[in-house]
Length: 288
Image (cartoon, rainbow, N blue to C red):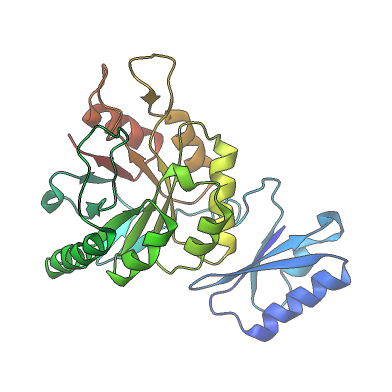
């Protein structure tokens, strides 16, 4: 069960809920967001009565949830989450982001720390210190044009530099989905974060990872889908339409579909973006 407190609930009201849980033999997990506190009841929830909890001061609602994702669930918040960054609404209307032509997009996407997979492809000779300095300049340039910036982090050590550059959003690739250290670090931030799954992750792994981030306090989360395993050898990845639809059904978080490495088969990136939007994605990232 989770207990959702009213916005800006007083510490005394939160403590009263905690004491109620203790008397019932349960423990609490408190997640402090930017606007409200969500308290998770840990233990045998069958002894709790949601109606009694909702009578406590400044309790908005108490919800019994059977999933392992609770804070991000539809039961916890029936309405879609919408975040505002530099005047751009994330999660409201469909946003098509073009990596190659960011000037035509509502949000500029930057991937300054990208390293080619093959060791025989051209590698950058610029140090990470120089890359970080360039990133500061790029973000500042886009901010002068009143455009928010999303930056992809490929290593936990890059996080401080990205924050120092005043990036507005952070994109964390699927390779970091199950890293508890990364979950903890991005959970402490107060900026929107894309939590992307990798090709082998299940829906449950994806949503539980996002839940762990939310438990650390950051509720400004976007679920990222960048492709799942495909049975065709020539096309290693395919867009996981079903996962997008399920994420929209079970959570209140906006979904980003990254189709940049998917549009090389029968369907183009534009067509895949349309399919993602039909499934419920609110942000589509493409480069073609």
